[in-house]
Every structure is written in C-alpha cells, then in structure tokens.
Image (tube, rainbow, N blue to C red; front, side):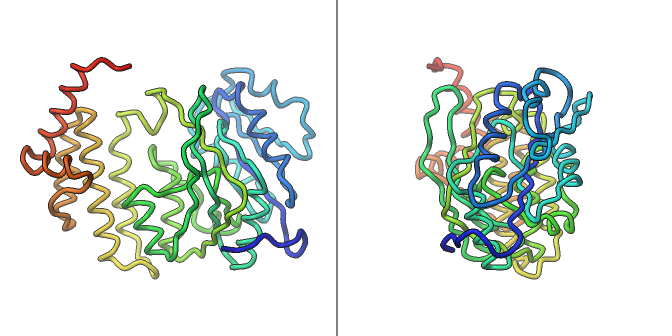
Length: 323
C-alpha cells in the first residue's frame, strides 16, 4: 500500500467526468464531493444525457472554470457521455463518476500518490455501497489485487470489484485503449478495467478515502434489467479474445467458465431459461464442472440440475410474500 505523499511533485490535475441522466436530485452532491477533494487540482465535466429535468439549472451557479457543462437534448447512454467527457478532459488523470455516487475523504489525492509512485495507468481505492433512501452502508471494500491475474480472477470470477467512483485513470492511457465500448450495455465499467489490465496496463492501490456507490432498488437500473442479459456474454468473449501479455489463456478460460456459471444462475433466476442454457453450456465448454456456491446450493443443483433448482426458487418466491 502506498502512503500518501505531501502535495507537490508531478502533475496533480484531475478531470472528473459525470454522465448525468435525470440527475437533478443528486448532481450537486456528486459535483461538490469532487470540488471539495484536497491535495489535487480537480475540475468537473458534466455531460447531461438528455434535457429531461432540471439538472442544468442545478449547475448554473458553479464557476465554469471548474465545472464545465456539456448538454445534449437526446439521451444516448452513459458510455457515449463518458467518451464525450473524456474527449474534453484536460487533466493528467480522469475519473468517471456516476451522477448519484460521490467521494469521501482524500480519495483523489491518495490515488494520485499511489499512481505516481508506481508509474501506474489506473488506480483503485476503497469503495462502500450505500442503500438509497435509508443511507445504510455495507462494509468497506478495500481492493487488494496482487497481480493482473489475481485482479482478473477476483473481479470477473468472484465479483470483488470497485465501481467507477473508486477508479482513477491516467487520461492518456484510457484514450490509448479506445475509451468506453459503446456497444456494451451491462458491466461497462468491468469491461474497460479488465481490457486495460489484460492489455498490460499497470495498476496501483490506495487506502485513502472512499468512493460511495449508491445502490437503487429500481428494477429499471441497468444492472438489474433483464433485457440486456446478453451483454455480459459479449464482455466475456471480448476478454477471452484479448492476446494478453500478463494473464495466460488458461487462466482467462477458467475464470470466464466460472463467470458463465454465475450468469447461467442469474438468467435462470430471472426466468430466461434459453439464455441460462447457453451460459451453462459455454461454462462447460470452457472446462467448469460441478457447481459453485453454498453447500445447500451445490447439493440442490447436483440433485435437480441448475435450471430446475432455480425454477424451484422462482416458484417459492411467488408463494412467499415479499416484505
């Protein structure tokens, strides 16, 4: 772990890109959390993704030298907004902060210190999930990735990841790898991070500050919707196709096999049995055998098969009222 250095030495300019879709209720919290960051020269680029509410009005009294606003009338998606903000970024470093998330403590300074000490292309800081409404928080997650292979296995195989609110990039590097893939509709942040790391991007870890990822119960949140479940398949295949100098093909296949098994369960749980069958078949093709998860899950899946095990879960869910 890199201890924070005293301010000074090297370029400490950070551009924070915030894609904003119907963000009137949260945008000032996100922007203020950036402008209050100590130890760096931070500026904000808000890309309003569709003039659909009062987001632009909430930004009128900020100093335009520190808060640049790019607004377009039509909604085109977060990845397009992030790439548009990336094109406008002037800082040595760039962060992509969702409009409902925010920063606490010296997160940016800690990341800059760590990345400068390691000559890194991207950096990871602690993250904490906060429930919308109640404000309750889960335990702080401190990333401890020890190598590119360990990061890939942890992030993609075990869902031990950090959200964009805890990831800082060297601007030149994220531009060099082509920015955000606008064809991906689910797990976009995982795809760009893993593409960078598999391609040989150097990463650093910081223990300073925390990014607050706000979890919403809405079924329309992109991570919860069922109409984009094919996108994670595309992500896995794209990562398998990379000619990586740091993570061998056998490791990537083993991790993706476990990922496909997880996707199969997720699809079955949502009633998407055809996609579940495809994911389970791909998992077996990549070499995964048996079942993973808790002992009751493994026993039930071995006896019933994975599809029937989740069909039973769906039936029980309908019988038991939600509280």
